[in-house]
View 1 (cartoon, rainbow, N blue to C red):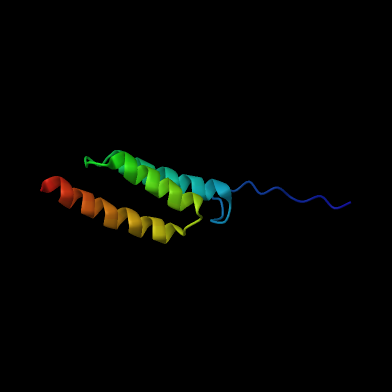
View 2 (cartoon, rainbow, N blue to C red):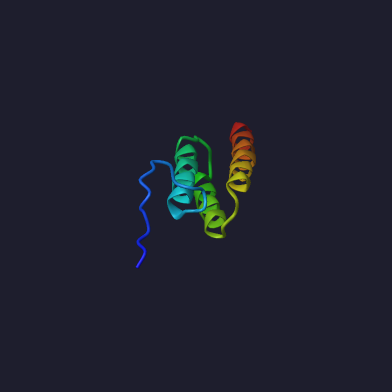
Length: 76
């Protein structure tokens, strides 16, 4: 019987769940630092997009666009 070697690298590949979780954690951390109305809804929306398995670049673009919109809305 052949035994698989365990890799002990500190960096996980992007297609493993741990890498995706750290990405959404960073997004949620950025949202928590925003001082805009509707921050809870933005957090909920980004979690929804993450659960729907959107790519990290899509999540990043959505966060950027929506945070700019909410900052504009807050300034009015």
